[in-house]
Image 1 (cartoon, one colour):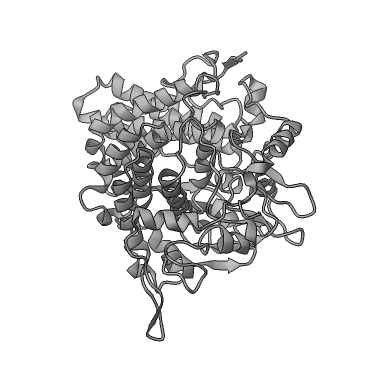
Image 2 (cartoon, one colour):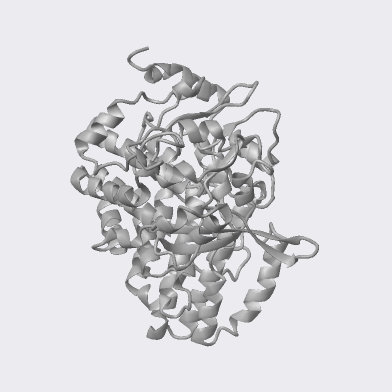
Length: 552
């Protein structure tokens, strides 16, 4: 039975964090001061979330591995890797994420109330649109973290999350989680109401890419509708971003090729990079933990991952670090325990440079043209429109791959435009990955799929999706998007732990919905359900036959 929670609506967390009390001290008194358009617009600058779920999503995904007991990792990284419920209340913890995104929702609600009190002037339609999009984005990030993947057959069964629409005046206001269907409907409503007017918002800002501009708004709408299984809308909205010349919003890699790590990383996050559609700055240690074995040496994206799962695994572009035409292949940095592609390196803000004191930041282009074109390709494929999907795949390949030349000889040619026959031949030539690999030979980019609430037909559709999901994987590592695809497609994988039983993630695994913070549960909000280890073991035993390749 769903429990009620008596909770302050603006952040659902005021009883949990002293900082929320500070926030309360500031905002309610400022409410009377939000008496001009300019003040509301300025408030919305602070509405973008200052927390990120990147660490949670990366550490729980199949992008990480155990390098052994001779190395160490932060406690939060180890707990996430083991798929444990997290009791910590540190930065990047579920507790921190919960409060950060709900604080963003609170500020949006504050702005919307102020606009209403100003009489809803037409001059503020852009501000209303921005507030609704930021609210929808923060709720979407909470949804993909704390809820199961969208599944229309189970959307009335799966738990949702409270979706505050007004600043709370009454601390005894009652909230309950509702269903996943109600949550997605609310997110969708905000997006649809905002899209027609978002072009009015970006004109107000000196650097629109730090705000929901038109392209960023439609990229968000594309991703949401892809996850929501509204494929026609996903295609429509992606096309608003990509236009008639999609390459114009894809990253131009030639200027990157000769850059070292620091310069590469700094260029990646620039607002004048055409591919970057929305850039969000978060307080996080995720860049540090995911980008360096010094801070996180045991559980990370290590050599085995890069060689046999992600960047160096065989693709139409080649394989390894040498015979490979894709940009990623020769831009890997670090050690065998942590191999990093420098698209998400830490930005450190010094408060006292002499003392070395300050704050760690992550600057993340959360929507890019490069991901949007792959998301459109995925939507096309799920509709059986393979010609259109192949056009997007080939556009992406044209910008990401270039003949690799050494001593005047081409040692890794860029792939020719792919046909459906090419994709089928390539994927059919691969073994499926084992759920629990015992050696590198058991790894592969080809995964068994157990789609959650939709159908993937064998042959053309599955093969196209195998390639697209891998392209999305390497495009988004280490930005935290892979875990959503694992949940959506029911891709099973294992976190091996040296000297211990493996930790296996199964299709429809309830641990895919991260457990709510303990303080929130103790306050009365219903916790996420869990399977017992015995139930997981029984499922694994009963499905072993699926993971036997034909030649074994």
